[in-house]
Image (cartoon, rainbow, N blue to C red; front, side):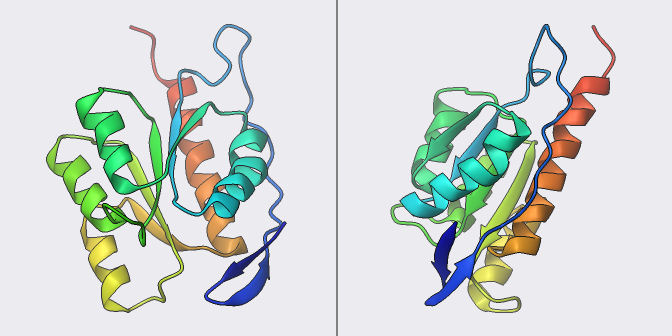
Amino acid sequence: GDFVIAGRPARLSVEVAPVQQNSQNKSFGARVLHVEDDALLRKTFELRVLRKLGVPFDVAVNGAEAVRFILAEGRSYTAVVMDNQMPILTGEMATRALREGGYAGLIVGMTGDPSGCPERSAFEAAGLTECVDKDNPGVKRVAELLRSAITALATRPLP
């Protein structure tokens, strides 16, 4: 799919293999929250990564929704994939609120902000597990991180 990053056309083409699933619980209890205000980027990421991984997911269109889902409604997520530049509550503010509220799961920042710029540095310092660019290598890295988190659930000892 084509989309625009920083005013330039970009092509997102990342091959993502599905996670091995067991028949009792398709994704070993994993669930991902994708936080992104841009509808085209939400759909592209959903099709290219989340659906190919075969992991259930929810979508929040801004940081305030993400904080509400996790801290107020108590929804459980294995991982959060978080944009930074969003209305109402930025990814930086939402990440900080989630960490202060006790969320200990994976939070992967995806941003168009260049490395070293103040906005990205503040986002990274807010409590992200990792921060990647919104480009093919970044999307591939997010897929790897999500796959690892799901696989870790699959290999945990049963209670």
